[in-house]
Picture 1 (cartoon, rainbow, N blue to C red):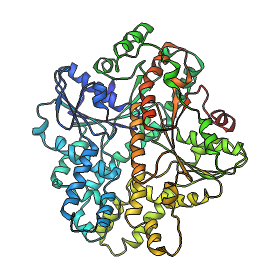
Picture 2 (picture 1 turned 180 degrees about the horizontal axis):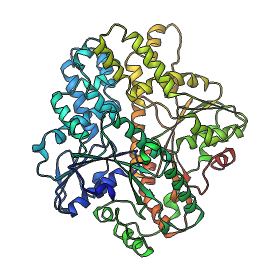
Picture 3 (picture 1 turned 90 degrees about the vertical axis):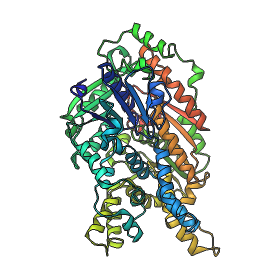
Picture 4 (picture 1 turned 45 degrees about the vertical axis):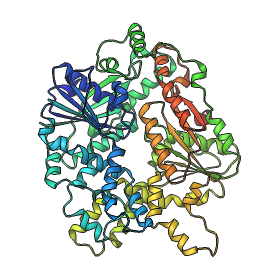
Length: 590
């Protein structure tokens, strides 16, 4: 592996959920230990499965790995860190402020920005205080901080004073009010991240356009603040041993195309390619094979999988679930309604949303399909007009630009230069885009009272509650209307299971399922209960023929069963030899 040549003290792995960065980070730690190095492995990933991958219990304290002398690990629990962080801010005013105000503050501190800032606050000492890590030759981090978080830490002025003056917006300034460390400590941590002699950033992706686009975005964002990634790892590329059946050949062709079309900025970086293994990377023995360059044979497939308890072909009953067609049949019980397909990037929610919309249109319904993804993505998926189906998009860039301009012209109108700079940085957060997009698709929510509206990508429960708790449209209407006449806000519409069906889309892999579970919990806090889950691109559901792919299918079973434990309705969409692009192929899914 080229990224392992002359490794510096700190190694950071970052990438899209499900790309395999935890496996790569763990395998890196094991490799360094095998070279006689002392290593501390640290995870700050909200969907961390380091404990599962290493096969040991790791908590929020440095834990020696007995099976691997020289290796210790630490899992910074993002939710635990965020909860402690919220409590530091809320405790001093509890009992002094009305319950509604406390609820508003709590919700402002419930989003991804709080989790991100709190996690960074936790591991800053590992970067800035050499005495805490001087017993280790290397510190390996699973998940790096985003450029947004680091820019926030570099802002001038006092966040607390800015908030107390009533100048902040309900986005990322609330989370920042709990920071306790001195700026000099953060400065040392950021300087360590910027120094290539001290830190190496490795961008991990799958051979998929969306995964490669994500690391391209991360690379650009971090480069803007002087943190330069030099290495790309393309993980999980299908090997020759997978055979030449139609399914395997099609996957190889898609992967080759994605790599050939890699964004220019990252295409020139030093690149390693890691082949997909027959089994999941669980346990030390499996991880030690991840970087192996030996040719995979059928014999070592059986050996490798037997050692991990995955030897054998799954029974038919183990992968049974309903079909997307069955979900569509249930959706048709009414002649209108809102259908929201949600999930993390790269799981195929655009394909699932388009397939549902096409099926409803084919059955004679009037359907409006809208998306917050780039227009070309949905346009490419449909590959032409469909009778009865109207297609539109909500442009997140334009919506966010308009929202930022409005806030700067109102809340920022009377601020000094430093105040405007702080507010402008706050408005660059992911929370801002969520709020701006929500305002635009509220219209689509109301439209679903007349016919079917299918939305590809929807706001998180945090955004919905943030708007409500901060005195949003819902509360304003409630105050204005009182008991004089009935009213119905978009949030109330989303909470009504008779009007709204939320479908969570995932893959049969640990990280996507964990992230979808977190999304479900987030939505339920807002009173929105997912109606169904769809497991997309399932190898098990495809019933492959070759030994290699059958073992990959066996590895999905645990995650399929986990989804069944979380959802009342579960549909599975098989990994297809031909991509579902165009009306006819989308219709085949249902």
